Length: 374
Picture 1 (spheres, rainbow, N blue to C red):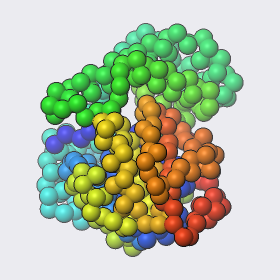
Picture 2 (cartoon, one colour; picture 1 turned 90 degrees about the horizontal axis):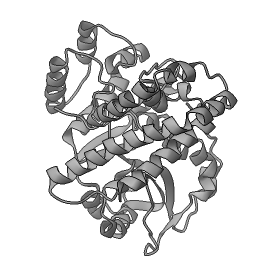
Picture 3 (spheres, helix red, strand yellow; picture 1 turned 30 degrees about the vertical axis):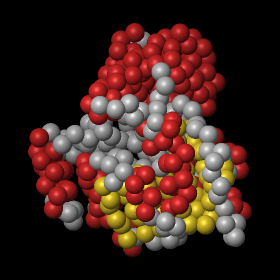
């Protein structure tokens, strides 16, 4: 069993902030599962997790069942946020009520890895780690310098002194991601990825690194601290899924929520799921579409949303034009404060609302933002 992702690469506080309380039915891309856990803080009645990968669905089921069954420290130890002996992690795994297929596949994975931490064992994280390792050879003191930065002003000065070397980091990331895309194209024997060129990757990563240094402390950010310093300390840079302030609320909500796991292509599913979902958390799925697919893709999503339903998605490079859509209107500007506070600016974030006789825009805007950002 191989995982594409085992760790968060999105700031899930953003989707958590946008999700109305007690939504009737939420659809979320499963991914590693870490982006799904924080949604329970808004107590959805039903949650459908969808992914084209059975492995990622299994990992999402693991996280949700761990949330339902384990206490906070146990949850952190099982996933690898806190240290645990292999026997202890094995014992915690045995407490979960998993489906037979998931239990079998995950137990085989854990046995093969000696019941070590799940975190950073995905294909994506390993490629980024290799890129970061190459970069740290050219800038060996970066970790120490970043850890000693206690203010944005000192970090901005550090960025100015390291700007040329950080462009080298963007180059290594570009190389890693470009090779990944090319390999996927060869394996799938079709050019289904919409990312345009290495030049776009390079400009994108350069912009993202600059934004990070100028807007938040790297050492307190769960993604950049791992990427640029080569280490991750959950007590300094927790992800949204291990936010202790919301853990018990998420646990209670997960126990009450009706959860479904669907292995399917999102377009095919939404084509037949008419007026079913009040909220769709799409991750960066549009990055993996051909330009010609985008309008039909958005039309499928439009069909599956209820009136006044909300769609949130991320894009790494550019947004496609959706001018042909009749009932999805962009409300991204209205949620600009939420978007600006996202602490993983590898993506541009887009928010749409399906128009209808009732307008929930003001209801959404009046919700308090989640203040505890990494």
